[in-house]
Length: 157
Image (cartoon, rainbow, N blue to C red; front, top):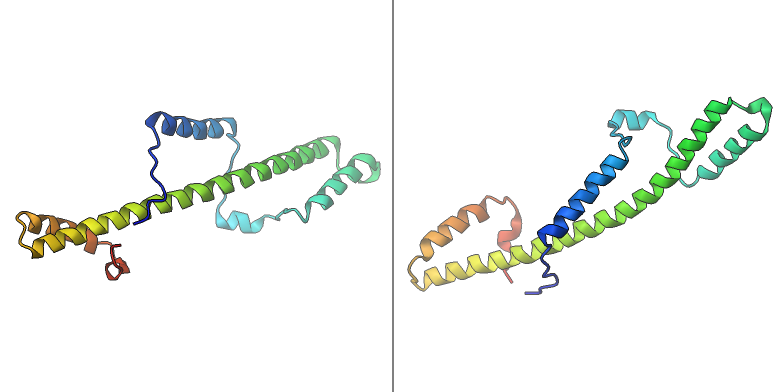
């Protein structure tokens, strides 16, 4: 068995991380959750449209004939700036989310291999007639068989 990760996240550190998430939510109370229908109704702006948007804002500011009004321009500039900031935040959170997900997967995979090894060993000890093994095999077997996946066909180690 490989043991690629063997870390204990201290409760104090875990609480600090969770507090950081709470702080992010507190500092960004404007964050919105849209339905799929709402998302599909909205125009998207990605990196390709960014130069167009910035140039349009510049023209709207400098050419009175196409100025939609100072309040609309100010709102557009704030939206554009927020979009830029949120893009940077999204990139960082995506990287972090991927790393958390992969590390979680690795930790779960390692402990699951160990648990299957223990279960296999208990079944082997039962075959040898070691007392008390039947209840362990039965107890673990009920939980193992409830998983509903094909891990039973894979070797424990």
